[in-house]
Image (cartoon, rainbow, N blue to C red; front, side, top):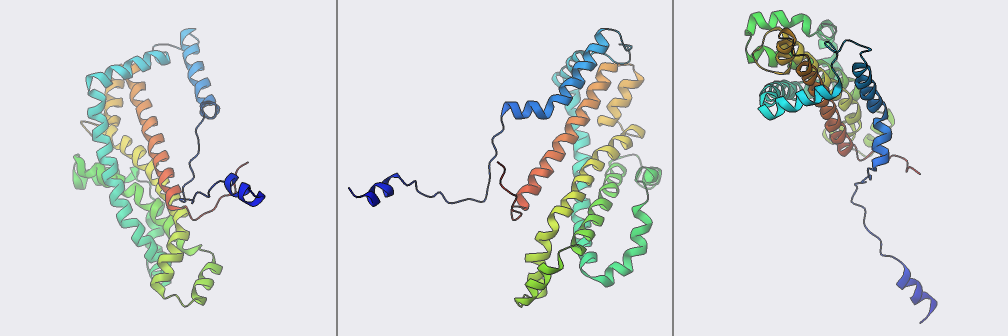
Length: 278
């Protein structure tokens, strides 16, 4: 057998790239990223067990975990969680469906931007919670006012980041596309929109955080269900471990929403080639 034939037998067949890069998650890597949280929880447990803080107001973390498991088993947490997540997703979805198209329009057409600029500047600096009494007066204390306040809070980060994303596209990309005689539709669809996705998702992630925080505050004011209502209820009835369990649930929910949005952003931004890590 010739040397060339031996080399052909040894050579491994090329595996076509699917465009996905799967990163292995090692337990050590997860531990390194979670070390600060683990230390915080250990200090919480230690300070409470040693009576360095008042256990009545800051119970040990293990007591909070037991209380959390208790309301999970009883179904109470699920009831309030479903109420909050429905309001958040509904208001968040309305904000995305309205803010992204409007932001693309305003960012792409200077005439629309000049026409709407005073209106945008007026409401971009208005805190959503400052308008909560207005929403309650107009829409009542039912579901509509909660969804409306979430929509308002999510609308502006998405809109402003979408406008910025379209306006800040690299001019060289636009010139290169126009040099290939692309019409306006193809230029927008193939160049402007893909280049804008990272900045748009920055606004979406900000809106995802606002959807939870604003809703919790609204539920504390007037609601009969939801995580915000549950935290207020447990505080008034001095169920302190259950109160911290509700707060921990909100933190986990916010972390999950942010992780999900980051994963979607990575899939939609596959065209961005990152340098290979050693």
